Image: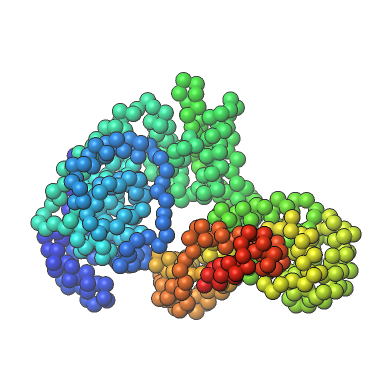
Length: 570
């Protein structure tokens, strides 16, 4: 039985509700509000949590299978019917407060993918995890409007042997008055105890052996330890801070290899990883169950590989990494490569990175489209980056076509922004390069990269000044914007804010330009519509912008193609 973290204001809910309204409206808060509650409201405002949040800005997939969920699911499925239909919700989270499992719920209570204070503000699950005790939060103690009629009690779920917090178990119901304990506190504690018993009963199973090895390696909260078997992933807090997603993917590949190989595994971490890894194999009766990796930050005096310097290459989304990896693969052979995409998507930045340290010549048709002389002087004697091919004059395109006919293995990188229909000579060039072309995705189709781009695009702060940070509300506004100017537009926004803002603390939505602060003017596209739009644009590119030929290739009428283009352009 855990001790209770008291709810300091549960006996004064109506006055507390009035105090919350004063806080939200910016008026002085009346005396008598418990400091713990007021501090929780302030944290929510600092994190940028909107008090009128009704649902997450974008659907967040639930975490996959885990040791905790495997043990808890049979227990919770037996307990859930005791809550009664439509009266209470039973919620299980992991140690990062991501929701793993939920059942039931009072009418009007929205489902949340996570219960961290950074996402939803003050709540009993976050309080229970922080204090490692049973915790209750009632009505206006919550920051969110939708939880003003909710009372919740949460209990931490602890690892049976080590006592590490593995997650939380919460029961949420309609608002109640009076003093603790919550009427369903006993049920919450019984459920947590049953889950802990199930975890203990699983000792000796492969998952438990991996968990035991992980707990032995942690030996305190300051060690960066990751345990992986290709399906489950256990990370200490220090490992979460130190290991990037690329490092974790490399460790997962190492775990899978170890389970299917007789040779000792070696962690092939990315070149730009900021850490090293010592790998220990977890075995049972000679069978490899997984690995435990102890991570160590690189010594500051140890030479590191040269990092990628270009902010436009920041991003780990699937569309962006696919484009970058395909371009890198194509440039390994000495033949021309075409980089195409909307303006501002990072074509030139990617081209410069692909050329790396090569002494390449760079010419820009936007500055002078008549490049016949430049191309004649080049004559395929070294790498060449040709920007804005759509701006080339017809004689320059003809000269380039002749040059490529004579030197099909020329090291040439061409950037092209589709727009007006190309002439016959340019169309011939695009057709010649089509088999070795890469289309860079627009920023609106890889919004998950925006947070990485913000860090990369932000200028280095002046000495003594903190780096730029952003509230969650501001980040949501940035992720919802359609970004017609793509990464270039985002870079201008970041630069302007860095140069002209006078406020301190994280950048808030109110500081953003009007077009970003007010949200997008058109509805967001569904994943299916994004895929259809990308297919149409790719087909238009292959046919040089000729809509009749693109419609025929897609098997649709020209009128249908025009209608879809109008819809996707908003």
